[in-house]
Length: 328
Image (tube, rainbow, N blue to C red):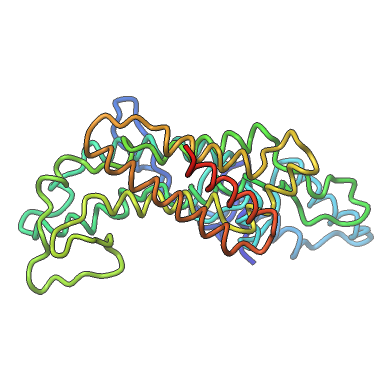
């Protein structure tokens, strides 16, 4: 099985799916010199050592094998699979780092650099300018997988595949500070200033020429032939808000707050979401229109939660917050 655990030791397995590692140089340019690791990772060495170690004659193999795993554990070389990605913030696909909120903030800074520089030079000379959109989509949504990683901290647990008698804490909740850092990082992705498109895209992206068909890899649009300058913000904000308001995450938030009131509950998350989306002060008319689109996404997702969540408490909280929002 693949190992998706986010270790403090870095990328520990060639069977992980990390996103290519891009960093910023001191001058603000992008450094792509270390997008992938070379060679196997430390978990791979542990797994091979455990599975194939040929011990000297007379060795008591059971404690010797256990020492291999215990030593790895002390170095934060551990094993969890992608089934755990939605609820354990140390398990992610297409992600780097072991602190999901900090990594989301880092990726958003890289995204700002890319968006500031984005323009027709993103495609080769002689290509239709409309094909800027093919490059714009992955650049604009550069943070999409880290949104999922950060959201996993909310209502999450730092659980392990615990064994009876191992003496380890099997399922500690994600600390309150870590959950709130993730919430703050996620809400920051909803700011209109982050979601408006670069000027070159607004001014220069024309309709697609004959023979260049649309595909699911492009942004949706309400504007017919013309590129829709609001729809990308709807896509990006829905990515964040949907991750925040999944029904199972909402149920976990309700339960964790009931057990430990110091941990954030669904009320806190929904209030923070609505406070961010409706409390924004746009700097331009374009930002104001984007803000309205994000508000609609937030309300739509809350309505969906109120109507369709399995847990009655979740439906009650979502309904109450919607009613209160309508009175404001």
